[in-house]
Each structure stands twice: as structure tokens, then as C-alpha cells.
Length: 317
Image (tube, rainbow, N blue to C red):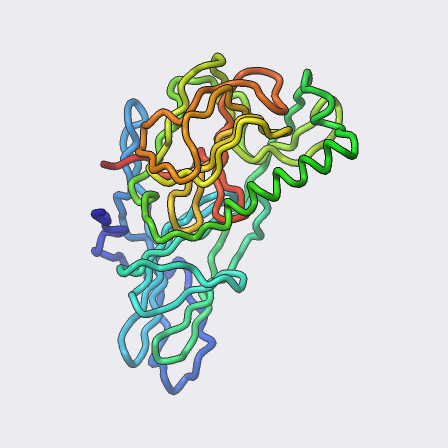
């Protein structure tokens, strides 16, 4: 698979942010910060025009040469981050070592309630380390009231609650996949086009009058039977038709711990292990499980971190 470049190389000097060294000072000459390099990351289709992103580059100068962490200039809660560092370095976030390809690309997800700053831990080939602070833009979320849901899915009895727990544990296992495929590099398209958005990421839900967990996906209102398309290529890691909360449910692994989920489907056309291509039909929209009307729920995760599909990069090939 061709791997598109992640950044324009014409870096512009800036003091926008600085990386903080925690290494042996005898090994390091200086700490310098570069930032705001113009990056044509992905192309938005149609009337939305062209999306031009900006890269923030944290450069750490060492006696062996500069190691840079290339990050988007603005990162917000719910965002997928595709970044890069010189090959041979290692990066950790919250104790998790991040998978890296041969060109130094790595990804991580910023959760709905992430703090205003997170920290990447960088380990260099010579054994020295650096910490790179990453500023996170905070968001405000809506309150959404949803009525007309099947009450047994809102306030389940003990037997149904136990079944829900088992089913959600199985979904959680599928989300642990950490494959080395890189389908995510080519961007994502919506699984249905032209649909009315009926639910957004992060909104606090009041279901049948009962406060519930935030809504962690993008809902698109369409008639039952509307074909659902894979937003990017990948491998089906979960496929069931009968989950209590989510009904017909499909997960697609896009690589590096990234996966899409599709809920409430009236029909599932794929099985675990199937390779799917972007745009391929994987099933049909419905209102199975806890739903008040027919729609497509598109969720997106980095492992167990739920991200906002509306913030995903658009296709660029």
C-alpha cells in the first residue's frame, strides 16, 4: 500500500509551543521549537472545498541530530491524531507504547473529556527521553432528550443487564485489535450520504427521561433498508445481529487500534474476517436495539477511546 506523506517539509519557524526536556543535559545541545507548517492533509469533497491543515512540529535538537514530533496545530477533544517522528524513536501515551510504521507514523485518540494538556513520552535510540506537551482544545456538548425507546433497553431487568454486559465485553475484546494495517491513511467517507444528522458525538443523553451515558457517535437518519457503506477499507472484527442495546452491529478494523462501529442495523452482510473496501456495502440501516427510529449510528474508536467521526480526515485519493 502506498503511504502518503504526512507533512510538507517546508517548516516555518515559530515559538508557538516548546517541548520540555527531561533528559541528561550532557547529551543534548539545545531545545528548539518549530511550528505551524502548512500541510495539505486531506481533500474535502463537494461544496466543502479543500481542507488545509497546519502542522505543529516540536523539534528536539540532540548531539546526534534533531528528532521532531509532527502534530496537527490544533487538537480537540474527540479527535483522531495522525502524527510522525523520526524512525527509531519510541512514543508512549499514558503508559501505552504507540505502534509505529517504518516511516515513523503513529496515531492516538483524544477522548471526549480529555484535559487541556496531555503528554507524549519520547524515548530516543540513545536511551535518552523527552516529554512533549500537547494542548487540547476543550469542547462544549449538547444535552439531547430521546423518547420512545424500548424501556427494557433503558432500565433492563437483571437478566437482560447481565446479557448486555456479556455482549459489550465481546465488543470490547474486538476493539483490542492492534493490527499493522494502515487503511486509515487514506481518509474516511460517511457510511451514508445526504442524511440528516440526528445525533452528535459527546452529547449528554436523557433516554425516556433517564440520564444516561453521553452519545459517542454520529447518527444519520435514513429509512430502514438504506445501504450502509464502509467508510474506509479494513477487516471485519465483529458482526452480530441480535445485541440488546445495539441490535445489528458491525466493527471494522482500520489498523493501529482504530475501528469503526455501525449499530442498529436491520441487515448485516459481512462476517468476522471479511476484508472490505471503502464504499463496499456492509449491511442496511435500521432501528434494532435501543433506537427510537431508523438511522445509522457510526462510532469510531482508538482502542477503548471513543472518538468523533465528524472530525475524521476526508478521503484524499
